Length: 529
Image (cartoon, rainbow, N blue to C red; front, side, top):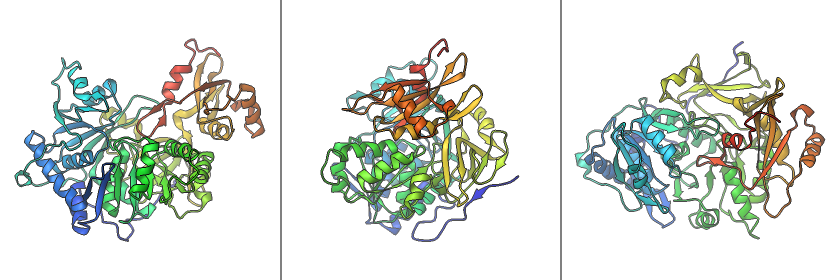
């Protein structure tokens, strides 16, 4: 049986065509099309137009070239979300370097893992930032087995510059892998994910088209630009000509006035970011996001209860989207879709991708049937830095996302969980997400994560980890069971363990819940209930 879903070629409109172009070529095209349009602004009111951005990128590229970076150089960078970061990232693309962005919040374990995996020759860091000495961290590492990368400092108003006239011609290689992003490792060790300019641009184009972005929009960037979402944001700016507010660090109470000051009209991130804004709105008698048109979800499924909470409390449109490090954008909704579609689906397949649903036995299934989501197309990763991982990740050219879902008869995609987030209790497969979505509706429950823990008699037992709501009493185990049964949950899916904690651990800049850490926290080493 062959059932797959696909979209057509690029639509028309005012978006710049990305086909057969590199990221640098898009910078040049956008600067020619909208030279005086604002591209970037920050909390200090520093601004760059698209033409100024192009010129600064060339100057920084010349400065980096003078330090020895050129085509094919292996460069890691760990920087906060500054205008200088976005310029440096693009300058490396201008030179044709192979770059590896590292989130600024990561420390020795993750940083040294990335440096060794990528065999980085250069490391661009902020020196001291947010009271942390990045250079000292690197110099204090064990470099007995390999040379320490050459350190280059980039910080606010501190970037290497040079004469653009000294630069060689920019390479034209849109399909050559020149990017390594590491997965956030919420359930396993990080994997080095390879991308090329063509794939990143294809994802950004489809994202901009689905959201209806244009030069009048102003994006707020609350997440680390080193995340794959940073590449998404940069490409949509170039494709659609919209501007963006770069926030060095995201503190809700400080960011909200900046959103208003700079006229931000949308933002992206995750359900967790939306819930942080909800908490701020509850402190204010007036709307905190008066200019916002919509907010875009990502980094995982959006529970219906969370969607309702965000949209009603903030009075904005919330557009679920689905992507991952390996495929920056897979499905998305638009601000013009119905509330039913936005609340109960995760969007429709983006332009340039094909998708199929495969059941547990490896059979491709039709609409309404659950299975693993598999995709192929230009936005999909070129493969893993460790080629040994590719055999399991790809089946006949299809990338296995590891996500479970189904396609409704009307074409909308619904995520139902993770393949590895299926709990197998006494041989029965139980979706953690089903229990999470049901439990999240309880008034005494904040965020929740349902995990499987090793159990000597059951194989796995079901544990619900609930985040405490401030100034509220904790839900009891009996209350949880009674509520879930009243909501219609089958008895065999009931959690056998309840843990209440102040804050769920997160992984990555998009605040995904780190279930691997929760399993370590609450697993009985003897595997007994």
